[in-house]
Amino acid sequence: MAQFQAYYSDGQSAQERSVDVRVVDGHLVFNCEQQQFCHDVKSCILSPKIGTTPQFIQLPCGGLLTSSEHSVLKQAFNKTPFVDSVSDRLEKHWRFALLSVIFSLFIVVNFVKYGIPYFADQAATLVSSQILDDASHASLQLLKDDLLTDSEITLERQQQIAELFYQLPAVEAHSNSYRLHFYKGNELKANAFALPSGDIVLTDELVTNMPSNMHILAILAHEVGHVEQKHGLRNFFRQAGLFIVFSVLLGDIGDISGSLTGLPMALLQLDFSREFEYEADQYSVEVLQARDLSPKLLIESFQRLEEIHLHDEGTHEQTDSKSAHSANALEIFMTHPLTENRIKNIERLAAESQP
Ligand SMILES: [Zn+2]
Image (cartoon, rainbow, N blue to C red; front, side, top):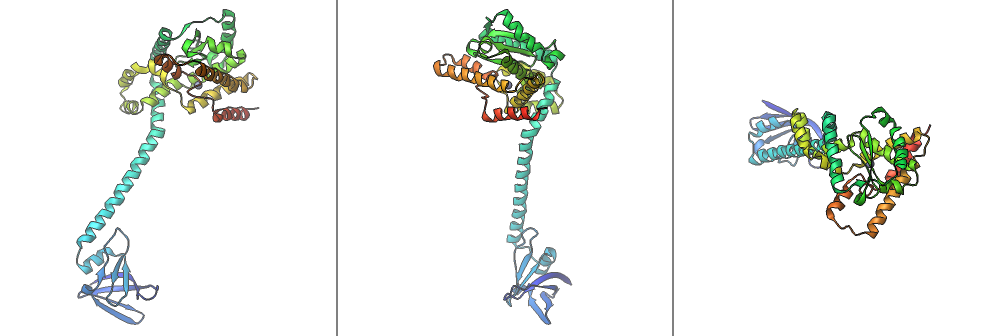
């Protein structure tokens, strides 16, 4: 004899009572408040089964039974109505499909947000310094062929700036990898940029437009910040994205080396993310403060660069799209303008590290 637990309501009031229902000879039999109920199963209507939610049994007397003992109900009513099985399966599938979609999205979003940068940064550490030097020198050669010409800054001024440069802590520590270059920027205008090898280029236009050598030092420190944190290479790998990630996962470093053929050009074309700019700013602020200089120098330098570039944009039409592209792609301050946020960040960094 089958039996199941249910809640009974008389259909008049909201009151529900727990009852034990027996299935006897095709009848549902139960007692409630000294009253015995006995209904032919055929005269009762069972609601479809939807997942694990309780099912209802509509009784001919107007009452209602609610129970979650699906298997006993199924046995008692001795049927799996077509609509039941379909709705149940659909419901299960629908939930499963939705959960799968949400889960997949979660994985993809997190992988793009954290996974790719993580693996890209790992990949950046795998590249040998020889490959890095070769790629950087090729980048510099591309610029020399196309845009840069010999510097017209006096040797004396170059000497003064170089002295400041070689006193930067990271440069002192790795003196054989860092090199400072002076070139006339031409279309590149007032500009500074760092290559992953430690080659840092200052254009004449930048040198002559800065209010003081200390302003140039602030920019040099920012550029050294990019080199120290391997931003150029990390940037390249982050943009190369999935391809690199799989190469690292599969341990196929040969493919990474193969993908580096585009590196010299990429180093000149990829913008740094805001995150990398903040890190380079932070490095500059630390250097300035260690020398008892105000971090305001960094803000003033960027503001000056912005003024120059905005002024030039206003007075000259870009003539050659190729040179305009190259010019815009470098570490200049038009692609990463000195936003309110960035100024605030520099000021916050300055305040935090104040002794
Ligand atoms: Zn930068």
